[in-house]
Length: 63
Image (tube, rainbow, N blue to C red; front, side, top):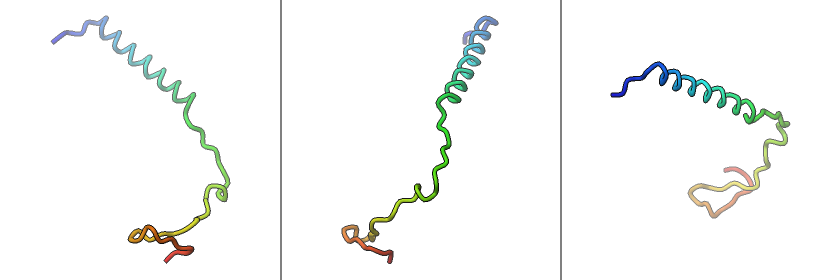
């Protein structure tokens, strides 16, 4: 088992800190933004209903 020297430990910790900072910066840059769209635009009109037991049959209304 290889022993970690102070130089190797500093190198590993420094790399982890730089990687974490880079990841945080990239996430902050390219994170998806929450755009509030009106509720009416988000819901689509139902074109037809179908019965899972008979998927070839389409209905205008539920039931």
